[in-house]
Length: 134
Image (cartoon, rainbow, N blue to C red):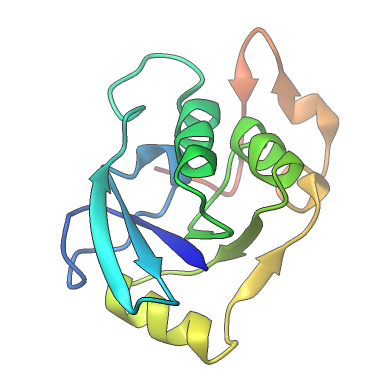
């Protein structure tokens, strides 16, 4: 199984990315082979639909689980439709991966966990997250 962790760098000691689409890298851990690789986020410098594009990249990589800070609604929709599990976490990639293996992360299961009021999101303006300040 492949697990992707949103990261602000290309090493296990890199800071964890607190928002999915703002991750500069995704660390993909292959649990079967016990290996990992860092991949630049192909949507990092894109002006629109960053989350959706990053999510499609991870789908194409065969990822089954994604660990990040916040997830935007576009990323959540793409990942959920692909059957990919989403978890919230924080700190370094290494700590996040350890917390995942120990079952200590909160799984994201519904869009309304991120967007409890649909009025916060419009196709014209994108998401507005009052709890996100980054």
